[in-house]
Image 1 (cartoon, rainbow, N blue to C red):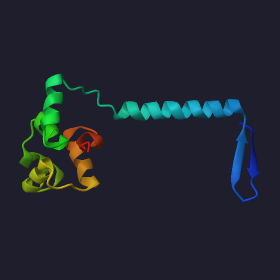
Image 2: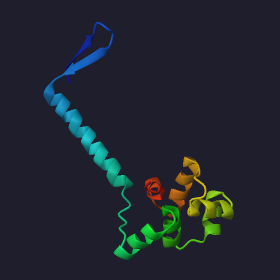
Image 3: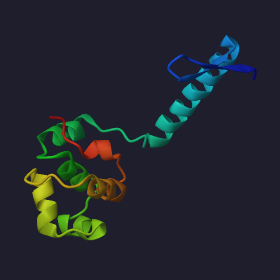
Image 4: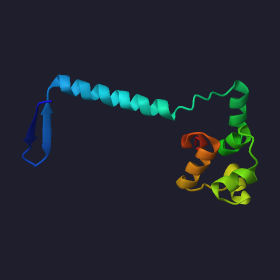
Amino acid sequence: MKHTLVVTPSGEELVLIAKADFDRIEDMLDVAAFDRAKAADTGETLSAEEVAKALEAATPLAFWRAKRGLKQKDLAAQVGISPSYAADLEAGRRKGEPALFKRLAVALRVRIEDLIADE
């Protein structure tokens, strides 16, 4: 790939490339983005009944724990928190740190985004 380095009067370095090369790079970025999205997709869909339960649940965490058939104390033990803290998270009384929600997402086999309530 041929390119030309240009330095602007302010010192910013720019690279000039052929449009065809730019198009190839853009295509590669699109493919990489698609691959990342595909890898993140669990392929799991919810029935209409499950969607209704998810909307009725106090928090997404409460819905997904129940859907996975886990008791609060078992999920709490898996992620290293007390059962009372897990209950507070499910009820929305506590927020929790991002690192905790990452552990919860792994334990529940969902994306971390699936555990965050829409405000």
